[in-house]
Length: 122
Image 1 (cartoon, rainbow, N blue to C red):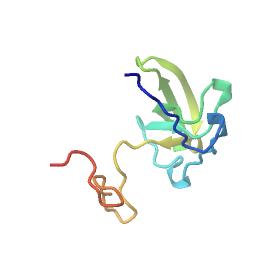
Image 2: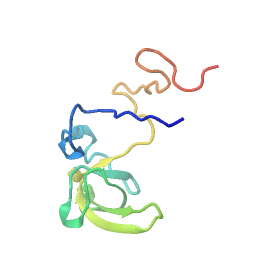
Image 3: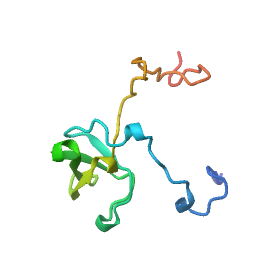
Image 4: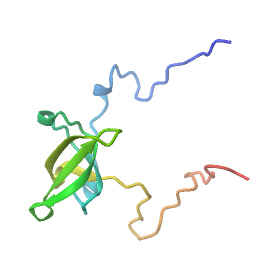
């Protein structure tokens, strides 16, 4: 039996990814509370260094009293392919765990908005 595939359209009839709307991170997530060894993403393209918005790196140095940061970008083998300084406004800290809500409570990550449990049921 031959597998059948169907095209899934996520954003209407866009011809290429370049036509996707420009993502602008919320201001409260840009350049805030960046610390040494944080994992960060670029918020804009840096064409002179061949770096694109969304590339992920590690903060390896804090510069100018926290107004700038040296970020190291590594490949899947851990080899550094770029290490440059950036203004805080060019970076966004990535979080690997849910962030507390504005009232300090932990968000419920186990249920969907419709209160349907996600994951194993039993």
